[in-house]
Length: 525
Image 1 (cartoon, rainbow, N blue to C red):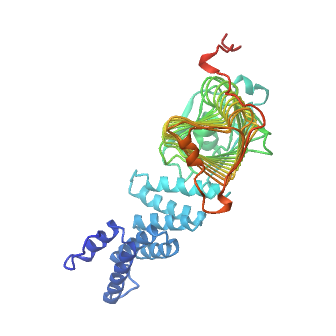
Image 2: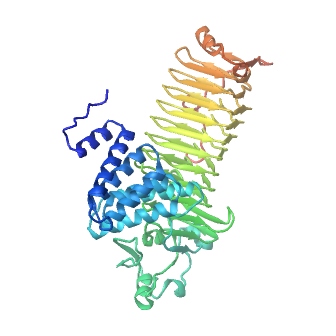
Image 3: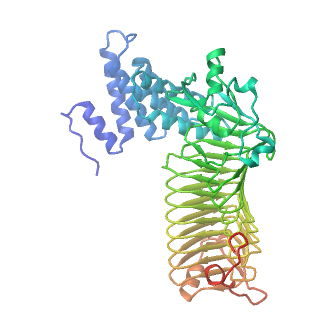
């Protein structure tokens, strides 16, 4: 039940009660009434009226709650006209413009709010996080409005890349004395730089003598130290490296390889991740080749860490290809992954989203999710992996839409614990088994074309639940009567009926491997 408004209370209290109870449309009506009253009482509407600005700002919030972005944008603009220093109005204006996908305008509004914060020496991060959201949402639409800062070039390390050395020194680009290992602290000239940061002595000398900032660097590490939020780091064609250390991405930056995919490569040889991402950023058009006993890319942090990785090739010869942990929410698009162990391993409460990606030829699973992690794939291919394509453990969630799973040397999908699988409009081909459910896991299969291969097409443990709709199942089934009855539940439409084709040959369970059988390892034996 909604709380009853007391007519004797002030309009401000009434507005708060309506907003807190989720009665946003009523709140808009109340704000509109008070706006009209204030206008009638005003002697001169040409003068600034902070109270009127606050009313417009609050009405903008009610519109945002209802996802009415255009009226929210209008109200936020009116609020800023009445009170240009009203921070909430700038924040809500940027939110409304983001909702309308006016990314450049949204970024400008957020930057205006950030400048007001800077004038007050306020260190809150509300606008910083909003700019991250805008930049990532824009990048998903191939709009890079969030990266309007400087462009920093990184030269190829050439033949010395595999030794972990930087690019050859160039005095015309690096400035004098750049060979010195000492570092100076100078204040960045870029408007988004609020703190001092480390750059080489050559960069400092060049800035002091020419009045311009250095834009060419010998290594990714050096460019990362000099970069600020909103900058772009462009890797020139050739081979780059992390100089034996992890490249830590803690700023909102865009890292892009020049030329066609494959011309620009990061060749890391170390026992630490090549790239560790703890802030929303964009990595695109890059080949990452990791040689060592750690994952190639590690993404971790809160749910505000939502990096975008586009058109990249990522491989690791000694461990997993990509690890995602914490509550991070990365987005992968048109990427290919290959790891000695897993292609993608998800932990914690992370949410990984993949679109049009290929995970192939991994030594273990293409994707393994544990804890409460979620993995969502759209139009992806998982193929030629030495174990399962998908493994869901604990309370993880796997969602596959129009994906193709093929040619794995284990079952296509193996779910345990209380994990949940949703698969729609996909196919399973040439694997040793199809969809297997153990313990208390469950699945929802919709219009799936599933071939069980040499093992069971569907295996359902007695405590598991499965729902099938409009599926074509070719192969043997392994389940008890209760599970069979749930699978055979009468559907409402003919299009929802399942088709079952018996296997033409005797099927078998895959042989035990892993901890039950000794496997020689040439790297450790």
